[in-house]
Image (cartoon, rainbow, N blue to C red; front, top):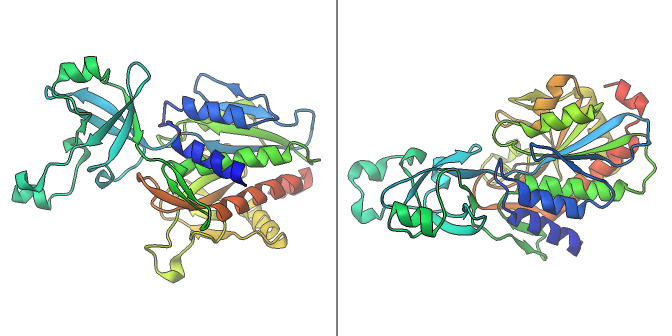
Amino acid sequence: MMKESLRIQELSNAFGPSGLEDDVLKIVQKEVKEIQLERDSFNNLSGVLNPKNHGPKIMFDAHMDEVGLIVQAVKPNGTMTFLPLGGQAASNFVSASYKLKNKKGEYVHAVVASKPPHFLSEIERNAAPQVSNLVLDCGSTSKEETEKEYALGIACFGVPDVECKFDEKKGLFYGKAFDDRIGVAAQIEVLNQLSKAKLPCQIQASFSTQEEVGERGVYANYKKLQPDVLICFEGCPADDTFQEPWLIQAGLHKGPMLRHFDVTMITNPRFQAFALDLAKKHHIPVQESVRSGGGTNAGRIHMEGVPSIVIGVPVRYIHSNYSYCALDDYQAAVQLGVTLAKHLTKEVIQQF
């Protein structure tokens, strides 16, 4: 288990905003032992675990990107305006520390500037933050210094400057990017566990890019692999610190979440029921949800007529710079993925 916790920490720490997932890709290639993963021009990875198996094709997917930002322009005073990559509240950025990759491929630290209260007008004190009013500050004093000395400028990418930590006693991870690095870690472990199993199906691996900006990469992998069903591993929003107890549907330490509905997908009810029944039979803790927002790669692929489900590991404060997720929820997600692969026969899938 130490190896898995270190893998999760390495994935969390990796620099991988939407569109620049290269560092995550290298970790996946290192950790997936039994599949020759191919990279495409989208920076997706894909491959087949058991290509000689002529059973139904099961595509496992997890997206490698994380929410972040991209520099839009450099101001005369050396600060930088930016745009979000992925859905984030403007308040998340204020006073936060970011790691930027400069034009030389080096990492540079910067903060989102926060005007001291001494200089705030009454209107500014009461106004909600707007990304358009925020700037990144790397410590420079001029546009020339930012661009020449720091090698920062237009189209430089950034991610939260946060180091992942694991509390072994509590079984709790603290860090960034668990959406969807915890899903990536789960998929890696599932593939490694299935590598020597006798299976009724062909196992396809999809590590996709640019999910946070519109579920883009997964479609290229779908077109290449042409699966019969999709199982999507996700980091999903935990709700146990702000919902009424009767409405908590994704709490920590209660197992992965299987969602019936979000704004992008009504989950195939027959596939969903099969997964829930299988979890119950094998004593795998799971949670069920109906969501008023959100969306995943499954929402993109189910539109192609592919029965799809989402196995979501609950993540507190998702799409912010600091998050928590639990080892036991991750382990249950892995167990469910492995168990599903061993039971998805041609006859079962025909019922979906």
